[in-house]
Each structure stands twice: as structure tokens, then as C-alpha cells.
Length: 394
Ligand code: SIN
Image (cartoon, rainbow, N blue to C red; front, top):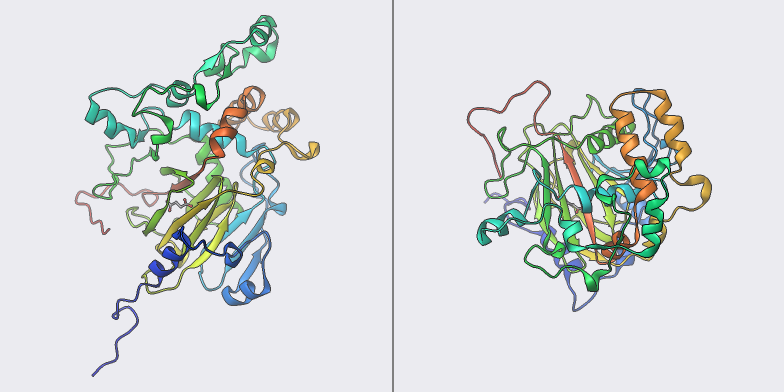
């Protein structure tokens, strides 16, 4: 009788590790996680962890929110080829811009969110801007005085912040509804992923945000990915402290040679990365705000999951502008925007407006309760069009 391989025996080591980290009754030992901020020699040896040296890409300018690539900490794992973990990518307050985009901008139409389905059920439109509706702003005497101060920087105000107002805190937020911000679970950008049939369609598409496209191209260029990454779809996941994301693979894109770029914001998480079957015991990685993971090569189609989100010990410092010399300052923008006048200048201007005018407190308060992840994908191969019949596997 032929011996059965571990796959044929239907061993699910992925589930075993997932359950361990999900369990609330017996809290897991987080010190067992692979922590790239504090790598143990045991983990280095067990997974073949190696430092990857990065080059400043020469054909794409660095946005002002980013650290120079020589200070990024990038690691690969021999046991999981094609996976790259990078930290120290963003400047101290550089992440604030992306938090603003994920909370304030991306959940607006025509981007698709899980709330669209609630809309259909209720036959009622969700607010045009969910963040502004759920965290309404109130005018203060101080802000009215500021309004009269007619200087140049006021003109560059974010369109949504024209009134120089302050957000109310969570206990005064609109309780209106099923459309409460805490109900937001995901947003899709670019080609909108259809969760039911696990497909993308050429007809379900909105413009991919140019800033996110730029950022993901920059990151993939820095790790030496070739050919040029073409970001066409993204999923932003919104987690609460008790949320999990079950084990899955990302097969729906047509180009499996292009990497997935995944950016974490907010509280910490346990990220599991396994193999192409669940018989492979996954590595459990500690993810923090600002960490970037790349899944490429043989891990592009690997099982992965988030069994746990947990409170970060360093949450505040991930977003604080200190030390002074290392935060996103106006000079960064002035230097950079002088150099080129294209997409880069528009994105830089938009970033500058956010940094100058963002009232950070409500965003920080919201992030204390959870985490967000942006995963950016290339759907089609360069020059490819959507096939007539859709040969998807799930
Ligand atoms: C995903 O797999 O889509 C998200 C992973 C994460 O939240 O880190």
C-alpha cells in the first residue's frame, strides 16, 4: 500500500496555529511571534531570516512621507521564499496621511464598501462621506478666529476642512445608524473584487488612487521587483480588536507573478503565512503600524491569515513627529516638488495639504480601537485584457 503524503492525510497545521492565536480563553504567548524589531537567533535559524539590502530606486522620486530606503529594515525568510517584511518605511508622522486616506477618503463612492450591501437592504443611501457623517465637526470660537486669518496656507486647505472646525469625540458622534463607521469592514479600489464569486471584472472598476499606485510602485522598485508593478486593485480591511481574517489565498488576479503589497496601520496583529496547502505550518509574524509585507514568488499563492489584533505598546510613537529632523516637514515637499512636475507634484501637494491641516486627534482615537490593512494587487499581466470566459479558481 502506497504511503500517503501529508497533503493526502488532510493535515491542517494552518488551522492549528490560527486557533492558538485566536484563542481568548488561553491567551497566546506573543513573545513566540517572529518580531522583526527584535529578532531572536532561534527564529533567524529556524526560518533562515536574512536582511535584504535595498537600493534607492533611481527612476522614481521618493515621496515626503517615506524614509530613505537605506534605513528601511527588510528581511526575507528562506523557508518562505518571496515573502519580504519591511519596517521603518514611513517617517514618524508619515503614516498619518495614509490613515487619513483610509478613514476619510477611500470609503467614499465610487469605491465599493461592505456598507453598499446595507444600503441595498435598507433602500437608503449611506452618507456621502462616512467619516464626516460619523464624526461631525463643531465650530469653536478659536477656529472661527482662525478662519478670519486670511493667510496663504488657509487657501490650500483640504476641501473637506474648509470650515476650520474641530471634530467632536466619539461620544458625540452621529448615532444615526447602520452606517456607523464601526460597521465598515472593507473598501475596494480600482478593479472591485467581487467577494461572492471571487472575481474581478473589467466593468466593475473605478480609478485607482494615484498616491497608492505611486507608493506601491516605489516599494516594489526598492525591493528590486521587475517588471514595473502595475497596481490595479486594492482591498482595505478594517479590523476591530476582536476581528480576525481567516486563512485564504489570493488567486483571483490573472498575474500571479506580480507581488501583493500589504501595508498595516494602527494596532498590532499576528500575521500567519503558510504554504500553498494548509499542511504547511505557518510562521506567525508580529505586524506593527507602518509595516509593509510583500508576497511574491512561491508565497504569492500561499495561505495567510490574521488570527489576532492586539493593542500596540508603541502605538502613539508610530505617528508622532519626533525627532524633529525626521518628520515630514514642509521643506521635504518644497525640495521634492521643485524637481519634477507630474503626478508626483500633485500627490506631494495633496500630502502637504493633509499634513498642514489634519486634525489628528479623532483619527488617533479611532485607531486606538483597531487596525487597517491595505493590500495592493496587479490584476492583469502587462498588455493583457480580461479573458472572455473567466478561468478562476477559488
Ligand atoms: C489580507 O490578507 O487581505 C490582509 C492581511 C492583513 O490584514 O495583514
